[in-house]
Image (cartoon, rainbow, N blue to C red; front, side, top):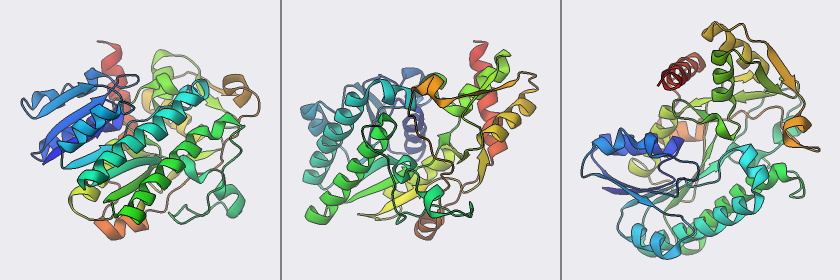
Length: 331
């Protein structure tokens, strides 16, 4: 089939492009390269004649309509990336997220093209710490969402993503459009840039360069991490082996670890003697920054639909990221 990937020069998008090409499909990548990179597409371009790159934005409605009409599957991954960029560019986050998504969905609905919309676990907000005092619960797709005020810019990204979800579901309910939404939980692996506040590449780079490993807050906040290859298998399956229209799926790894323990594990695996430095949130993100203590997925729904579950352990992820950062630092 012919597959369109918006944001395809980014971290997840470039891995997805390789998966689609390896399965025999043709791929067009639409990306404005604001955070993506052509270097991420080196392997994809080796599939000569089957991988096309178009530099442009999802805010260009005419371009989006033209490209969508030429394809049979659409992955809408284009988004502002990283907490730091969201904090610096809140208006860009909202406008690109909502206008661009509507352009993609409107064109896909008109042509009846199955489309996957990427969302984030950020939409759950602080639900677990308020609803699960035991500290053992997991977030399912029908869990209560508990976000902060949009006046606190920490929540602008999550609010925008939630609006994108609502838009996709509304197209399905009112017009029968074949759309599905996924909520990614901390997808990590090779090619993820440390430039936008991503925790694992930042900690790995600091450890390898002998700098203090930055851990924000107390470090007791817990997260779960999913290898990008596992994430790609999940979203590939949703558009090519199922018809989950109008559904929302968690895509993540239920195993969780505190950020402090993560930093200590990275020090061990890299053989680094760098200290771990605890940094108050307000030093990096400004006063009033809010964070959640846990964000762990229940993945039973996607397991029921696809039989999918993560194959890579946290150590697998860390070893690959360490190898990737090491090889690119020396090049």
